[in-house]
Structures are given as C-alpha cells and as structure tokens.
Length: 196
Image (cartoon, rainbow, N blue to C red; front, side, top):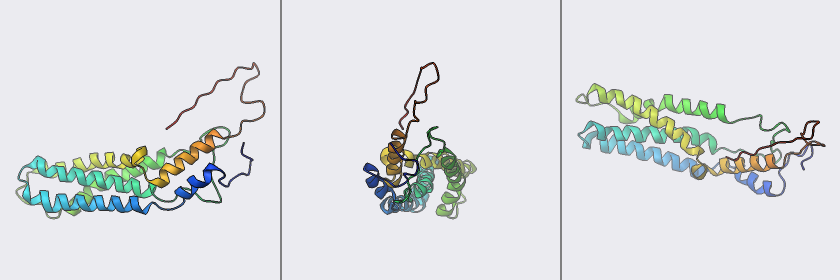
C-alpha cells in the first residue's frame, strides 16, 4: 500500500527506475545506423543500379520505415523516470495516456518521411516516370507510419520505455484501495484488469 506522499521508487521499482533514468544510447545509435544504411541502399545502390521502377521504390520504402522508427524511437529512448519522483495513478485509475503523443509522433513521421527520402535520393534522373516520382512520396508516408509504430512493440522497444511501462504496471497493481472498497451500498463489486 502506497502512502499519499510516497513518490520515491522502492523495492523492485528502484531497479526499473534506474533502467528508465538514463537515455538508451545504444538504441538511438542503432536507429541512426539503420537510417544511414537506408541512405546507402537507396541513394548509392538502388538509384543507379536497378533499372525497374518497383525495385527502386524498395529503397524509398526502407527509408520511410527507418525514418519513422527514428522519430518515435528517439523520444521513447529518452529518460522516463526520476529517482526522486515516480508518478503513479490516482485511485480512479489511469487518467494519463501516451496515445496523444504517439499520434503526434506518428503524424510527424508521416509528414517528414517523404522529405527525408527526397533529400537522401538527391537529383531525380529525368528518365524516371511521373508515377514513380509520385510513389516516392506516398510509399515513404505509409512506411513512415509503420516505422513509427515499431518502437512501441514490446521486444523492439528501447530499454527506457520498457522499464517505464513495467514501473507503471507495478504502481497500478499496488494502487491503494479506499477503506470499504469501491463497492456500492448493496455489496456488489466488479473489477477488471488489462495488461499491455
């Protein structure tokens, strides 16, 4: 049972908070390396060495995917815990959600992925058809959206995000129940648990 002013991590929460307290530099570096690999693949390999339009569009898709993962993953790998303050849910339940920020990051990835692909592609050869040039805008938008959702997958998420989610679950499971419970006057009580 947590006291009303019990803000510091305790017990199992200390280790989780230590993992979530520092930026996951390895995760960030790997995302930057994936983006560099996408630039090399599309700009230096596929642009001049593949003579079919669908083959060249693979590079645009990979560029959008890695860019979307970088946009969301960069935020998720930042510190998510403070050793002097662990936020917990009030007795009413989870009133704060990560969904609006996730939607904003996905929107940013969708809007900027075609720009990233255009910059890394460089001057477009004149012999490319208009349909391919148009597809190099649409495909990165779609794959940028998919890429922005990849860092939220549990086993692909950065260490800081996984630890903060586990910390939230611990705090939610240990949330205090008011005296007498939440049952109405007739004594009937019902509850549910959802795990992500």
